[in-house]
Length: 177
Image (cartoon, rainbow, N blue to C red; front, side, top):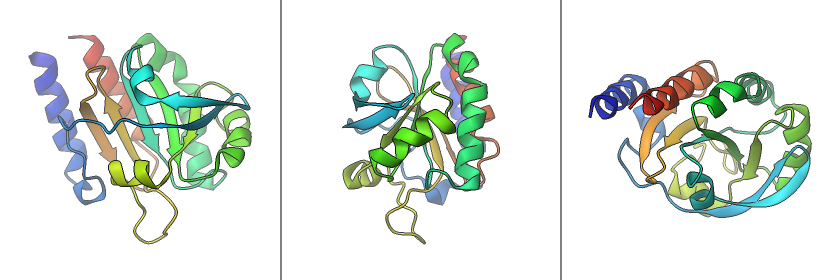
């Protein structure tokens, strides 16, 4: 109960300045999906429900591979991947880029430490992350999804700074329950 209140408070604080960007609220059911992804340069099929069997999932959407902010965010997630794993969480980066572009991104910017996957139109729509000013791209929204499949935390802001820190704090709070 204490953890749930903390997560709701964290979510409310983080959503306050940017709630208009992400429609999925804390407590909402995360849309199930299967898509193609890459990790360490190798492609594979990724299904959300399979990932949730291992624990919480940090599903972070980014606009475009190999752009300065997206590369910096991926490197920051890679630097902290051991902290996410210690908290029992799986990190998955998502963008509307084709999987062929993400293969190179998974090795160069993600350092082969976590998966990145292609968010097709149904995923983009389901998570309400379409970048309004640039069709075919996603906004920068990070979701922490509990093993139950419910959204536990949301950080939605185009500036990448803060996404890693806030999502890590959310998964660590989940671990303390």
